[in-house]
Length: 288
Image (cartoon, rainbow, N blue to C red; front, side, top):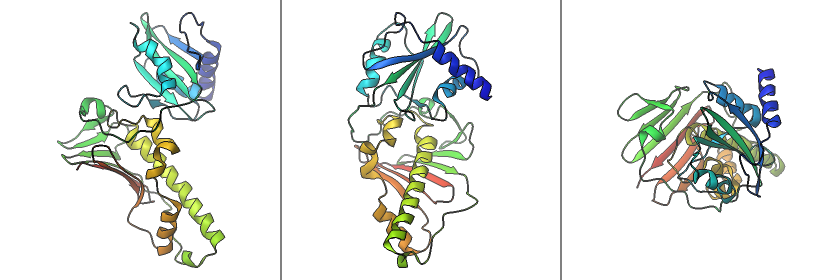
């Protein structure tokens, strides 16, 4: 598998495009491309993406989401052409964001990679789209009842949809739950700060897990693109603070849930992400 990934990576780098075929705007540069004369079949597409993206996570661009100017400088000419993109993804876990565009080419397909300078959309208020089409939103889920959906690959990832609430749950119990010291309040300021920082790091990891499980497994619910949820300038007002963590730890016993993210959307909806700290994650969207 490592050999195959290395081979794909080598192909991506060695197949740098001639600009005559795919012109890149001045703010982006063409990183490479991989072509399949008969189209990408089976897992080949995702093997290629992984070979270029490494251990990072590719996030699908939402045509109805907030548009980063740097992304649109690449996409606008393509969207306005006769050769429309089939899929668009972006990865941020590298020095510069990398955009990948899947395009038809003859009877086959080609993935073109563009390296961007930065992601430059200005933060806007979180908003839920008014029209949610289940076939689009829950494309990676199967419907098991009138209100319940289960992920096709991860049966412990579920969604419950009611008139006033959408509830996402992911249950994967940890063998070693979070530790709560009953004598936390008696510790020195230095020890308290160190422990709070440890918990803050853990909860940020839990938040990233919730984004992957809930936000990135669905499409078209929110106006933020998947990567906006990770950016401090977009999420900082809604994240748990060190002071709140210290208050929780001072109790000396575990709470039922820890709210990691909570925001009020433009339409009055409340979006809350929380964790037990023991492998159970939840996102609830409550309508007014």
